Image (cartoon, rainbow, N blue to C red; front, side):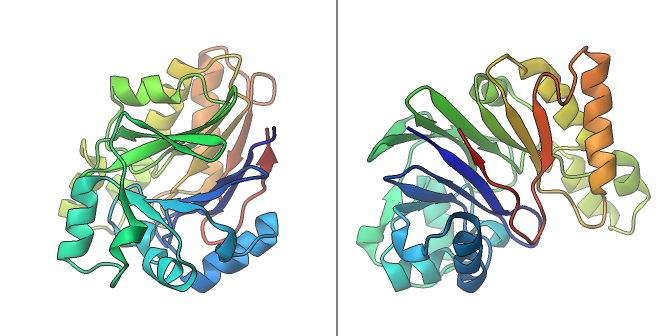
Length: 267
């Protein structure tokens, strides 16, 4: 059975990733307006938000949850997040009122079956209440979404390994960030262990976890101010090349577009 993958948008202005089969359709995050997510789904996979079986939230920052509440209220879509993420969302009223029976807790390290797919949350280091990435499985297929990662942990490596498709954060070029206009405290946060992954760190991580099963990698969550698509691609490809890994031969490397729908893939 086929598993489809399409980034609706990936970046600081909003994140939402579609993954689905013939029988089930989910989003990882809903960090755009309901209208933009609806248009993205129609353009990418030809379905409306009314067909969604769930939205899986990585953490409570606005660029990951902006549209979650409105979609759930309008279409009755179930929302999944970790316990502490829900506590933060509710305490700060970040997505408005959502019926309690549509709010579900997903625990890191546990697998959740949803029709014919399995979703597993895993811990990531980021400055949020209880942030996670997600692995999605269908039969022998595996897709992993891992962004907003301050540093690479053994757990992150383990969850990425064995994937067919990975969406991996490649947020910033270190020199652009250091020499850019951001205030020092924000630069320190981004470069910290609970901040965001640099192009270089993304390349080094991929070099560590590459395996024959991996077919496609999308670099995502690129900073609009501290990165450029060409720099991200070239930095990652150069590191891989130094480790005797060839883009185009060993796997295909793409960019998850910021603010627009990327190409979709079918496993």
